[in-house]
Amino acid sequence: MKTPLRLVLCFIALVASARGGDVVVSAAASLKDVLTELAPLCQKQTGVAFTTNLAASGVLAQQIKSGAPADIFISADDATMDSLDKAGLLQPGSRAKLLGNALVIVVPVANTRKYDKPDFVGGADIKHLAIGDPKTVPAGRYATAYLDKLKLSAAVKDKLVPLDNVRTVLAAVAAGNAEAGIVYSTDAAIEKKVRVAWTVPVADGPAINYPIAIVKNSSAPAAAAKVREFLLSDAARAVFARYGFILPEKTVAPAPAPAASSAK
Image 1 (cartoon, rainbow, N blue to C red):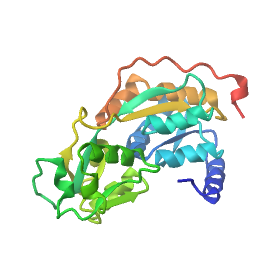
Image 2: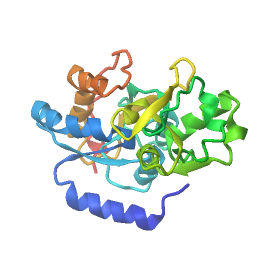
Image 3: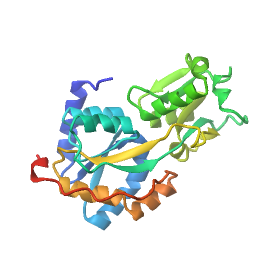
Image 4: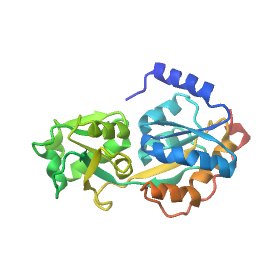
């Protein structure tokens, strides 16, 4: 699904007027809370401030392809990052594994029923199952892959409510507008109006990876490299772990120094 040009142009104007000297980190919506905590820590440790542009990964990728200002991109899946890589829009050598996550099925906290299998989503008491829109939201693609694996796709086909990002899915369940939703475990942990009815074992679910990379046309590639290095640092990893993200093995080399031609 393409982002309307009018919305992209509006976004470009807003970011250009608001960013000042900050590095712009375009990141998956599921990273909202942890990046909010990390931003001042990054500035304290590196002297570089960053602001976030949060949305579904597919929407962010389309913004970058359309020329929207961005210095760092953090996707909630490899496929979306691959699309920018193939388009030549990433700084070579800057891509790295940042985080992992796991899926959970959440229900409103008022629903106290015990579920011992994930196939309860196909039952009569679940009339609306909220997921991220698989066209643009990696969490939605992970959810549909899991439902396919369980052979539940047919049972939930008419119940699916695709929404624009994973936080919107969480809000729909919290408000009681959907009897269940599939989100990341890190999202469920920050919403008191939902409870986890089923945790997808990491071994049984799709591999969830959040890659990070510097955008090739960054207007501040040196500053972006410092932010990337900070987000991959032990200090940042400790915060990510506290929010429940899965940490990959730390085998990341520093990003290469950007060539002068990479800046606008």
